[in-house]
Length: 307
Image (cartoon, helix red, strand yellow):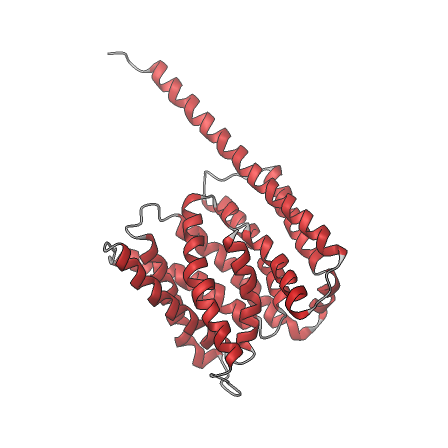
């Protein structure tokens, strides 16, 4: 729930930031500072760290997928699309995660309950922005939409890559490496991608948004997400993407006095039911696998040579 609420608010903070900062520069500053803070905290808590070439390169790859492309492209996309539209596109992330999981893992299997839940989640998000879907026909939004879609798929792929690291020496240290390296790639890319005309470095709203994103969006929420990935199937850990748009709409209603329609209520019910179905589908799948594994173990014991 913490991830759902916190990352739901980051769309608004990012939108505020990119109104005054170049997107890659803004995201790069955020993530390198957050990564540095997390690395320091990780070493204070646990002196152990894996600095082998294999682990460092692995964390840099995850950082590139999830931070440079995932977060960087969303931040860049929000220069061209409203935060609500960005949240709508990002709600497709569990679908990408499930698709990538099905193609890369023998353990994960698609079933009707998971499929129905994912579909309901997307429908629910669509209901939230029913009155804004016509904006997709506006060509000025296309670059932002494509960038956010790429970001969503890369975040899902990075999540799966991180999930495969089953025996980390220091999980928090790895998360810090991901944030720092991903942010460094953004800063390196900024002169090529960004336009510095009209930059307002000391604008109070942008600085507050940056501070909020560093502390809550990156240090706290990203660490919580990595912990969730280590304990839950990717399809469940990424369910937060369904809740984020709802949080964005509520914030708009409370802070910007945006209308709260009956479609929002229907969307909330649909999303919650979709989340329930996905969770139930995964539980059913894993219970079936555990039962099958237990039955196989009994068979082996029964057929083993008693000598």
